[in-house]
Image 1 (cartoon, rainbow, N blue to C red):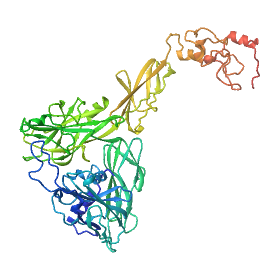
Image 2: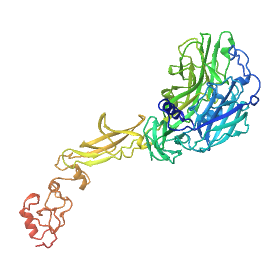
Image 3: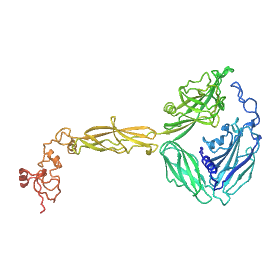
Image 4: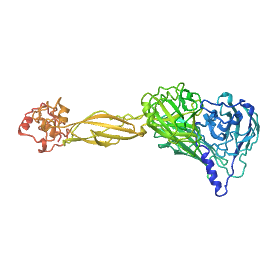
Length: 638
């Protein structure tokens, strides 16, 4: 699991309740007792780096004074659940397994810092685990020395723990540098009500348009509690398949980092757990980093390469006493346009004046430097300040979105210059990529939409008023991150917006129109497509619309308005006005020529009436009919 805010909210909730009226429920706690073994770690002294002009430490200190320990819970599948305690306020980068399990967010860390303490018995204190569902878990212990983060300086132990409500106080076998190991689990004695246990599952990394498959668990002493999923934080909207089911899906409207809350409610008491979903996100570890130094008492420092140090210094004690850091990232794992880019850096700061102070991150255009050779005298120049981060201990962040977006669109390599801010006489350090918590980028990406304005359309001015209504069709537009990510459809002719929406109806004047569909997604990425709309009218001015002429004749010019093309007694203009077929002498097939038919559009057998309208019969036509001209005789129903 990459880390959540798990345990933080429930612990705070308990504290608030305890501060008010007396609680009406019992708690359920777990304590892990142990004694770290001095002989488990390498004997000797920590590395003393004197290349800067003085040692890290004012006097030699023995290795055991710098051990660090973490104790945490994982589920039976190895997914991180919570930290029970960590003995290391700032030197925790050597706890590589705990770091890998808990991830960027070191939630649930409690207890005092015990760095420098003697190798006496320890315990995690009584940690409230009431909110954790019943089941089988792994208690993980890690012991290392913060100057030796390699395998020789690391010690591990794993113990199985079953949370079932029954009190336990077993002694456990010595393992991996841990002795006198035991646990104290209070269980859930019958009688009082207990909060339900709830677990939202491991963190997930997904790529849109995929959904996150959520699989939570919940238990309670009074049966199965009701559960509810909610969005706790994140940049977009979250839609749950069934917010009241432990196993369900969650779909996301856009990229980003989301925290989802799972609540369990037994009718009177509630518990909460959280899962983090990284949507369209990649984490990029620095490929290179190094320090450059100028130090007056040591003239050779300007030509010294400091690659390989665990910590990179950022000092400014005057012009001849400075250190700065350079960091390089390979962006080839970013599959699309950068939406956000956040630098994450872990600080081991100190200062000789009251802080905090901001540190600066500058862009470096020259990516040709190498961590193996860079020195103060060969360092590349840097540009403007991209962002700043505050000093202190632990993780800090800086927004590099604009810079990383540009670099990703270019050579896909990004270099930054990390240095002191504007405050003089100030020192600090950050962990290098040689440690397990070196500089990294969290990048979210967004794939642009694809606009589709539909096929070209040719329509006719059916009303003869010089215009026609057309339905535009943008339904073919898509977004690889999900069509729901499309936020707007805008239709323009030239610079004029003529409509919005996926399928609007627009009235166009006779003529040819070039229409542009502009599709915008949730991150402002835009795609366009063009469609041609042609409205045909009476361009030759003969009284017959072009569309009608083209419907029956090979061209507009081929239709002579005064010609009787089917010899039915009506010329083409009269055929258009009557609604009859200009190439069929008997449109309604009633045996009467259109020119002699009182109503040429009525089917056979219908009463035709007498005279009037466009079907009025001329004397010549009537004589011709009586003379049998037309070649067809049919009976007339009486």
